[in-house]
Length: 348
Image (cartoon, rainbow, N blue to C red; front, side, top):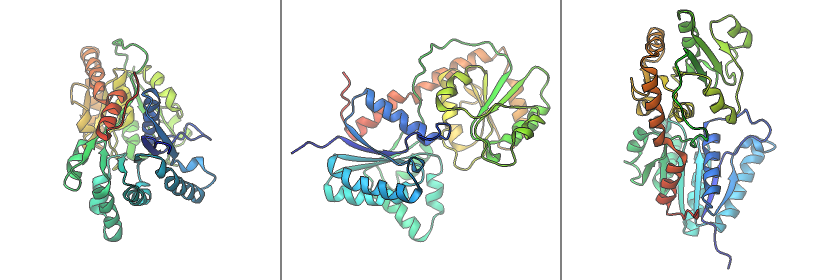
């Protein structure tokens, strides 16, 4: 009898039609695939990105059918999801119980406990069933991990991660160049950046990158502001773009914010950040050391934060940002993930 593969991975692969249409979950899952390939982990894959199928209905049918047949070929089923877990996880749990294999759920994003707590009726019972019966739960925020331990003691921290950049880090000079890289919509703090930029002294540059997700923001709209809209980036353009700037701006108040990947990427190249006082962000930004934390929607604080970073304190902040990245090193966290699941790392 043919031996089973160590693990079945279910998660969103890169959009094959348009690589600019990406998000945190896609980046994180594909980072994991790269790590698994390098570590020679014995896995098989199901792509859960509906954009890679002919339509949404076909996607769901294909994914369920694939889960059914591939579950017989593995020792462990691992689902990596932002929202679809509520559909797939109950089926995975049932299949795993029948086959006497283990399961894990890695939930992306920072809204899991809020969504669970506010849900009612059948939806809440389904979510509770998932969180109680999945063998291993992984969340990216420590606050969420602590909350879910009351439901499932086998709950672990798997933060947003990135791979170590190939380029060697060198401290840069401060040139008053600030950048926003994220999806462009109101809750990301775009209006606050535009309003703040009007009051900046001469010599500052504020550039915005990202796909426009809110129809109020057009390229003409940005041409009439004090910021520059520079278009969307593919995932492999982010680091090279970041290195042209000194500080990341992310004054977000988006409810689903966890550990934004762009903050981790900024740390990886020694770029400090200005962010808002949200639970996830306050867990990963050391105020005054790796960046500055301001209150959401507070334009005055945002302006003062920008002005507070200067040539005298920038070098130390850049150094501390680079040091902070070690917590979010993809290799380090992938090894911990494999050790928790007791799956072999075959890399010599």
